Structure formats: C-alpha cells, structure tokens
Image (cartoon, rainbow, N blue to C red; front, side, top):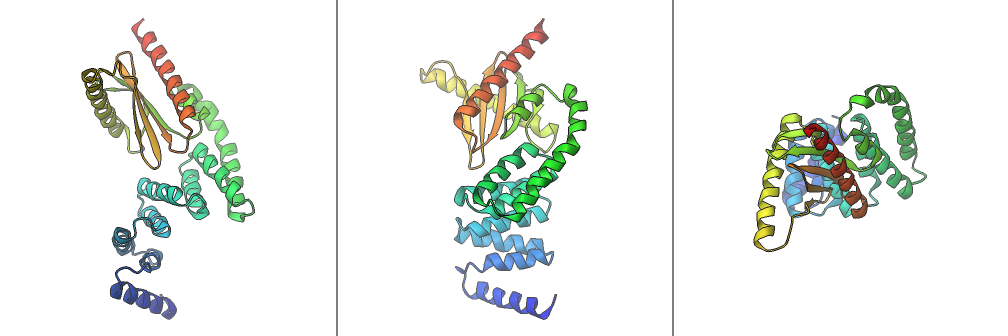
Length: 270
C-alpha cells in the first residue's frame, strides 16, 4: 500500500472515529475491501448502516463486500435494496448483470440490461455487457438444446417467463416432487417446501375460521421478490418472481404452473 493510500485510510479512520454520524464509513469500507480486508470492511458498513439505513452507496458497497466474500445471495439482496432506493443507480445494475452472467442466469441479466440501457444508453460498460450476454447465449445454445428434454417439469416455463426465480411442486406430505427454488441445494428446497406447506395448512384453517371461503393462495412480498403459494390437488405449487414483474404477469405464471402441476399429478395417478 503506497503512502497516499495509507494517508487516506488514516484520514478516513480519524473522521469516522471522531464523528460517528459521518458517511465517510462508505469510502473507508471500500478502501479496506480493495486491500482485501473484507472482515473490517463488513463491520464498518454494517455499523454505518445502523445510523444511515437508506444510504444508497453504503448498500451498494455492502453488496460489493459480500460479493468479495463469496456471499452472492447477500450481495444480490443489497443491490436489490439499491434498486428500490435509487432505480437510476446504474452501477448496482452493472454489478447485478456481471453476477448473473457469471452464474449463467441469462434471463435475469437481460432484464437488468434492458433497464440499464434505458437509463444509460451511451454507457460503454452497458454496451460491453450486452455483447457479453449475446455471446454467452450463443455459446450456451447447444448445451441447452441437448438438455431441454430432461431439464425438469417447469424448466420451459421458467425459460419463457423473464423474471422467474423458481417454481416447485410440493406434495401434500411436504415432500419436494418437482422443480427448484433456492441456490443452496436440494435439501434447502425440501425444507422450504415443508415450511410453506405448513403455512398453507395454517392459512387454510384461518380462512375457514374467519369464514373467508376456500383458500386461493398465499402471496409473500419483499423488496426484491414475490413468492406465491397456490394449492393444487394433494399439494402446493410455489412460484417465485422478481419484485418488478407485474402482478398480472406473475398471476398468469402461477396459473400456468398450476396447470402443469395438475396435469403431472393426474398422469401419475393413472
């Protein structure tokens, strides 16, 4: 580390130490992240966000810190918060796009790229990422064609519907029958299925107790996603979409997923 960087770190550290309300913690955290000290950078950012919970650049920097630590889901969460606080924050969208491209999530990358192109049409980084997406899709096309037949019950539906994060079919006993949802593995998906199947049962009892009629579904929304739990014969369908997907489009996706699930369950009973 050169003298200039050292003096900068010292100056920033002194400012943050003497003024707890200073927003210099963001720049200081970035300096520590860049030198590889992600643990100190993380502590600084989390502490600073306690005093400045809506600080856009702090959430953006926290996402970069999580990414550097390999905690990509947490990075996605932080950049999703940035999008909610500042939809025109192009840097966060570029970070999302790069991560999506790295994970081969091309539909999600395209959604973010289209938004970035609207907000920064002359940005060279946006143009480069668009070219990278097209190249990645060309390279992936042969593999996708070979695996399409065995990609899963909801694979085609997920490919056709931009913004879909996952679709699962869970049996009445809480067992995962088809699909995927999280990126933490099958066991995580199974636990999610058991939990949401139990939530559906509780919601059904509440609806009955209040005289609300037959339960049509449960919708859970966050800043970055919408999760819908919809009953089917002897089970539930769970559909997750990005928060910016219009409610009508999400509802049509859920309906289509239910139709696919009902057909699948009917075929199994024959």
